[in-house]
Length: 462
Ligand code: GDP
Image (cartoon, rainbow, N blue to C red; front, side):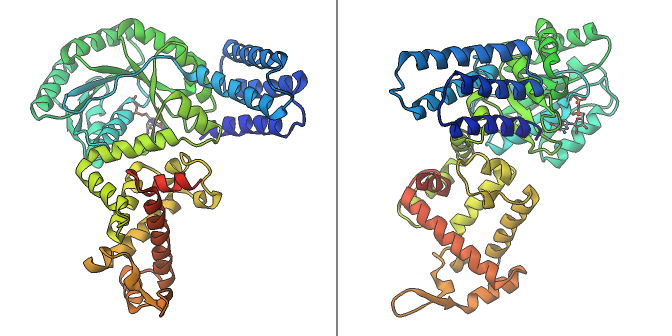
């Protein structure tokens, strides 16, 4: 992700502040210069960058001059760091809360935007996102302008196992949108996503069509899909759309490929419209939830505990009974191998490993090593191993895999390990490793005794 570059530069600047023996005006100026250069390189608007510099400077100087630091450099460093963090958050915070789909209500989301911005791809990503969180989701393709639009929706929705609606014969997009929404409402879908057409020319016609579709389907939220590569121009584009279709949220796509991403995000924030997601790749799971504070925390390598917990909550909400049962087991310290397998599967469902891992502050670097594919493969192999276990073994605490000595301590492995390794096409060593990790997690979970399973255990141990 290109923003990682910006993150690295900001981090380097803040580390040099940490190393400085004294924090005076000179150090502050040098630090701000470095930070502002990094932001400008990421295409953030010059005026916004100047404002940030001025505000941090004012806050820091007021503190220096007040004498409240009691001569301690560490206090000065904290104040400067906090001021920078707060101002970076301000830079991407429109100060407006977006609409949140509600359970027990049919939430209609309409997507608008110019052709090629990633609208159709994003609609499927959104459907998958909500589906994973327990919302029965579907897509209505109301794009009759672009040849092949319905085929694209059909293909990606089928791949994502999401219901869809569209027509090869109907040419009126308003009629299709209305029919689709009525049909899916009748079928009690929770989230209905309406994809509209986006074109390059005839803009006034496009806007008129958007207004008519909006009137027909009465969306709870209209989302503008913007391409990050336009950088600061995102502000003008979103203002133009806002004049016609009053959208309540924005998704910025292609954040994975463009150095101008920082510019697009900050420009959008300036229009006082909340960004709800960032598109970060072509895969269906490449959609990151966006909120200002966690975004900056992650950018600065500070983790995102809030985001992680939210993620876990959402996953739990998709299956509340199961999660309650799990919480009870954890409280009683009875986490079986089967339960643990479920937790691994939950994590795999949450998205690419690196994304989850980057939310956990202070996670040992070696756990993040390798690509997402490698991380996923490691987890898959763990699942294969447990697939070769019998029901009794899965429901156990793993001790039956061990030969215990007289003092109750494990002395070796039993024939069960060899059998499971053979059955799963792995090695005895891998089975042993899995059992070892299971025990570690089970112990952590017991210590945490909490609702969110072992991830909370990890947090408590830090
Ligand atoms: P639409 O015309 O707005 O509906 O755009 P499409 O959904 O057809 O997307 C246009 C192109 O952008 C396709 O090749 C998508 O795979 C690609 N795309 C969409 N979102 C992203 C993203 O977040 N990152 C990357 N790298 N490509 C994307």
